[in-house]
Image 1 (cartoon, rainbow, N blue to C red):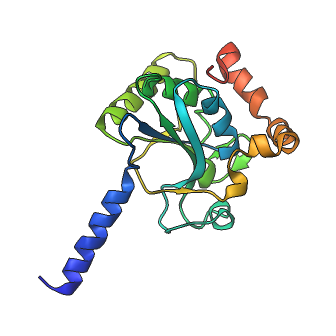
Image 2 (cartoon, one colour):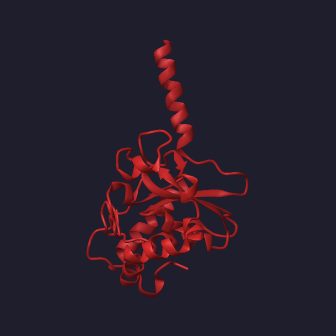
Image 3 (cartoon, rainbow, N blue to C red):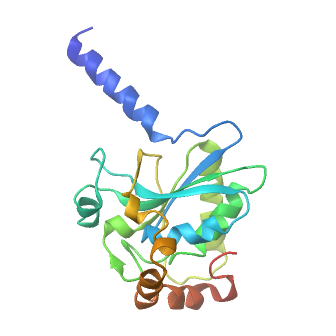
Length: 203
């Protein structure tokens, strides 16, 4: 076996090992992209059984991306949130329910006022069971007839997840006034209420 082939196989193995985010015993991981990651942390932080949330980037082709490049759309990453949860206290299906009710499922390559592929909505299943649940939840939503447009939210393969810079973590707690203004000016809550009514937020 040549060194070139061995190196390629090693690189492939490393990429594969990075794709699914490992969880400790008794914990599980869910990764969702729903536009601005600042806005995707709060609903999960309020959910019983969620142990932590991390704002970050996933689905791209550059290692260790930074906010400037991701927001410019040059790395292929989506803004996303990684949720570590206790599956004995909250199900993945419940996390999916919350996810859908915090996004605009029919908005393609954008969410609310944020436009670009880096802000599109997507689910990144970490295993076959999550993929089955994600596909069922999307199919069930389509079957309700609630939307006249096709659901644009994608179900994508697990990919390396990179935590965003520290100042992005828990932004809504660190900068409550700026966060509230951003959320209002972006029209997020108004659109969620228009779509979901009293289900908006999913809590």
